[in-house]
Length: 202
Image (tube, rainbow, N blue to C red; front, side):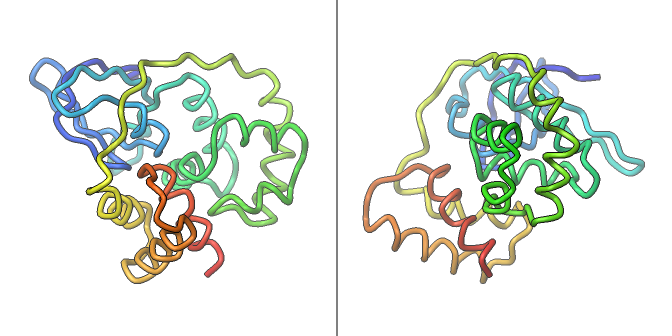
């Protein structure tokens, strides 16, 4: 089991990192919150990881806090939620908000998270409410600067495509999100979270 990685960050996108650990390059899928906190390419990156094993593939998922990794593991334990969907959920809402909604049994708020319908929201509360209360406090890793404003739109489009949305829908959602922000500076994470609201309404 690969529980953590520490090495040189070779490349980064809103949904995936490439980390060199003693000459071995690890591709790591990440939620948006990790993208915002991780360092720039060439820096030393430390990630808490979860190795998802399938018959035809091994996939690493990375996080900057223990809270997010624990939430990811809880999410994929719920029937109907796989690793990609869990990654998308954690990209659309903060870990603290997600735990609060589940703990409070707030089904309505949960259904506003991209990818979660009424049935899954009810399942999350039933299956995870008690477990959420036993979660450990988050372990934070060093924060880092966000991507430059000039590359935010293209990185957001790439992220939405990586999360499974077709290009037409992704572009439409991004246009709506940019219009909502009315020209204000933003981060990749904020732009994608806003765009995800529009994809879920399609």
